[in-house]
Amino acid sequence: MDTQWQKLSPAQKQEARFAEWMAPQGLPFASPEAERAYKERAQMFKDAVQLKKPQRVPIALLPGIVPFSYGGITVEEAMYDYDKLGHAMRKFNTDFETDIVITCLLTGAGKVFEILDYKLYRWPGHGVALDSQYQCVETEYMRADEYDLLINDPSGYWMRCYLPRVFGALGPWQMLSPLTDVIELPFTGGFMVPFGMPDVQQAFKKLLEAGQAALEWINAAVGIDVASMTTLGLPPLFSGYTKAPFDTLGDTLRGTRAIMLDKFRQPQKVLAAVERLAPLNVEAGVRIATANHGPFVFIPLHKGADGFMSNDDFKKFYWPSLKAVIVGLVREGLVPLLFVEGGYNERLSIVADPDIPACTTLWLFDRTDMKEVKKHFGGWAAFGGNLPVSLLQTGTPQDVRSNVKKLLDDVAGDGGFVLAPGAVVDHARPENLHAWIDAGREYGIYR
Image 1 (cartoon, rainbow, N blue to C red):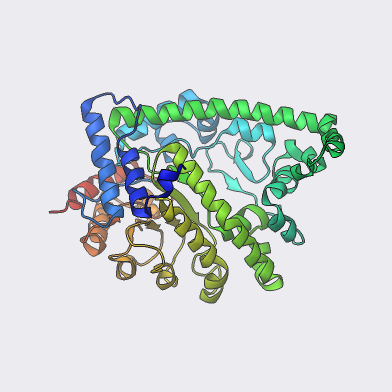
Image 2 (cartoon, rainbow, N blue to C red; image 1 turned 120 degrees about the vertical axis):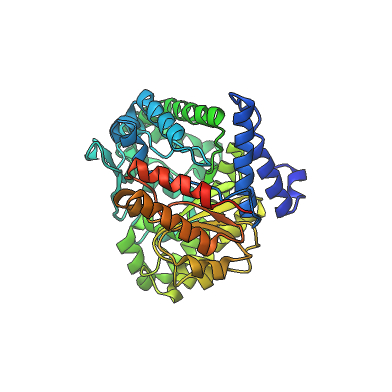
């Protein structure tokens, strides 16, 4: 960011980011109507975040694999065949026109995972059925005695320890030395020796091959999304992403069982690690959102839900570093979009933190009492979610309409609300999706 940007207040930065998102440069809209629809929808989300009453409640769907079954393809085909992916996503966006583009960027690039021999996940055709959602394979990719290695040099740890364990093709990277060894002429030759080893060179060839596959995937995926954005007037909701530091440690590195034991066996190491990761997670969110010219940074919350730990442990291990990430993003004018998985009924008084400025965050809840959310968040932060995804699969259209009306009547009257499911939607009856969207448009109008 330039010096002039840093002189702006967080509120001014937020306005600048919203303005850039709402009037995207170089986006070739198919018609004036599509451009007008795009800006109207983006304005609704901006108004909601800033606790105003938009023309109606904005509607956002977080897709899992439901667009693929609706489009008549398998999940494996969506991850490998970009023509079929494009057909399915354009059909889904056209037939279920919410207020955001249902992106295919979350689908995943199967060819990339296959080339690198990805160990952290099983994906369709590689450990799970062709029509299944991917599955995380938790284990201790970071060992219990490696906290100091992570804390002292996170990037070096990722390169020489973590990545060789989760990508089979990069196993030889364990032989590399830290890049900081290159300090003077006499030592440079020795540093370069591992790069001449056949196994290391093969690993880099695989990395280049994966990079080419990733470029093909991103070009196809962006093209698919842009087609729906420009023809239907659908803004993208997610511009960046990051994680709660405790989730980076628990999901990515140590695994659930290990991180929960670490809280008791080496709590100071856990605290030092999440503190070290917090600024890195801020930087990632800022960098990615800035590159994508939008305000929202997606943060899925995994291990902070009720039942994972006590409130005292939540306040000690989970919340301070997450709060640091939220505040860091807000200072740069970004809007953290927190996807609050599970229940946070015991956490509301903690996360409704006055140190986080009002009108700067959006929280989408899963199984939290929304009337209680309203009590804690009203006048402070935008919120939404809570529609049971099971209802979209097992209920009737009337069940869905009744649920939407009650939810809107209960908590949406003052503005600052987004209509969204409580979780990622993998399975849904088409008539129920239509009922959900239609009810949102009918009952969500502010008069």
